[in-house]
Image: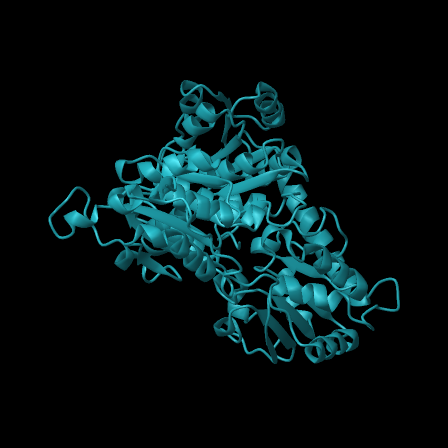
Length: 544
């Protein structure tokens, strides 16, 4: 007689077949067989204090590894608590799988504990949302969900599984699905590559702008090689952040608007023309736009594409970098030198602002010091508004995807989950979170998770005691009736100390770097709470 396994183990086996080695969760009665299955199949279980953080961790896992991030949560409120994380992954086009517990089939429409029809909630923010009703088909359902998650640009998927479907046993002979989704990312035809290479070679003022499509570092080296061959300025956001080593002469940071206004050709690789990029309207009207995206509906969105190419941006960069005739003959383009001068001028202005003496820490000094502390080889999650926008321009992170920003959704509370996944995947790397004081309030209790699991994540809060971005906005409309915009300078570091981590308060500029060094030396999860000067106006919305 064949041995039997329960549905939870079959689920875990299917996840392992997909390459998953870590599952994020907050425990609950409706998912106990799934968790037990992970133990039996050798999948690491990382448990959090709020399901939103588990969902954010699953998204970051995908971004960092290129593999499917998975979160398992119990029915009802456990599932609904993941919606913000799923929404964030949806707008960032990040594949991830939410496994939801569900009431037993025999309790359908009886008012059982936490009975909900979950898939309907996820219809607008997932690529696939369904219920698995049959134990023998659980592995098949996992493969279907994964196929949808990685199709096109990619995105989140949801699958709920009734408790009795998880607990039922089946013969240990079910064959795992194979070759159920595309392997090599879709590239472009050879003629398309030749034509685009000719356009780039003939352009006098080309600009490369890369965003999504470089998940897990795919195509990052080719992106750099392409810029170097053309001696063209390059700008990055989203998953392409970090593709260029810090200080690379062709990497632009502060003069992107100047570059767009003067370019005669823009090569856009996985870029959204949304609010972060001025809806594409900052590009000179006469410039030629070559737009590459895995999602056909994004081609020409808000900005006409003279050459719209449906292909995986990372794969396209690899093809293009290998094309003949791209090399720029001289050592440097005058156009590139012009933009480098613009970058240098803006950097000098930011340094001058950082050097202004102030009683509290000013925002530019905060950004510069924090960035220098984390250096080039860390993974940094950013979770906030104005202070994150300022700090992002200073960050030195030099591996594609290792700046974990929320993306176009602008979600607060992403940082703790993102950093959790980063430290779990890369235990030997320095992992940090740059918080606004507003951002810390959402999921700051995950420092308990870090303490419990021995994960030395280092957080730093830019604490001005207000919802800075929104207070500024509110003042523009109703200056005499400000409400709900002040927080006070709370002792967030004491919370982390109470949980068993390291905490320190900084109120003077000279105290900041030594405090960060002490936090790192502690070997504990740490939070440095920095009182920054509200009167120092910071940058506008963070353009992830």
